Image 1: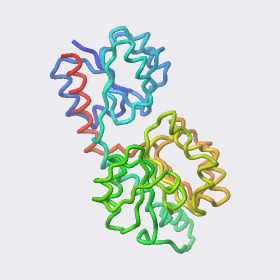
Image 2 (image 1 turned 180 degrees about the horizontal axis):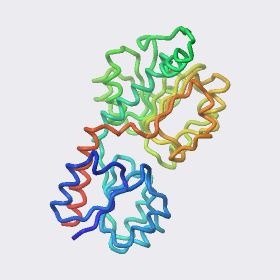
Image 3 (image 1 turned 60 degrees about the vertical axis):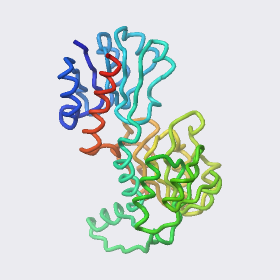
Image 4 (image 1 turned 45 degrees about the vertical axis):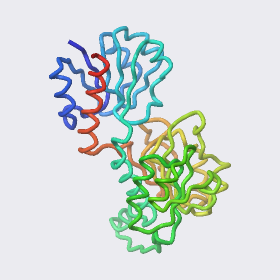
Length: 308
């Protein structure tokens, strides 16, 4: 019998398809009892006899691997593997897999939701009317705006597809540009600098790498239009949160919407929460019934493939 640790949350609630596959294979499943990622200390307590992991966004590194002599496979419950030390995993003979493309629609919907929340100031107006205030600020329609994508992979392209009905101009920067997909969506591919300088709304869809760490900083923000809106459903480490605070305070950035933070779970005293034009969600972009069901199957099959 293989022992599987599931660090992704709500596994028995939303991932029954994948759980059944593992149980039918003969696996014993240890589920995350917390409504959050495991801490390194908590992982150390449970990892010693684990054969495989369905991993959320917990940190997996050399120290953890050194305490897991039986561990053979980590199936990331999502796309990004920046929380896993891949070199250390390889050195320990641990196979790491992820689920590219599975959460595309779910994350794209969240990005569009944040764009509309900011441009139409929906959270602010909802709070104001509940206070008895009848404020009616003006807004720009998306058809008059330029949406710029930093990264033009599957999620960004899905956002572009969903935005087509709103008729904005769309531009994108990608290190490995896909001209065919851009042409299909009417997106103009251009340089990073052009996206920063020409966009009214910038939506981040880049992986977390040393190259993208704090890519959004004082210098790159200075290149943006005054009153730009910034959306981040990718990774929190891509944005310098201190620089973002300064830009929100000065008005350089008119609004920011994010589903991700440099450190998660985020603390309630985060300075960003002082700004009413800042809209945040707790890394919930991929939390849909459909995505969880599909991802549970993909991760279960990945673990079994390694065991076989």
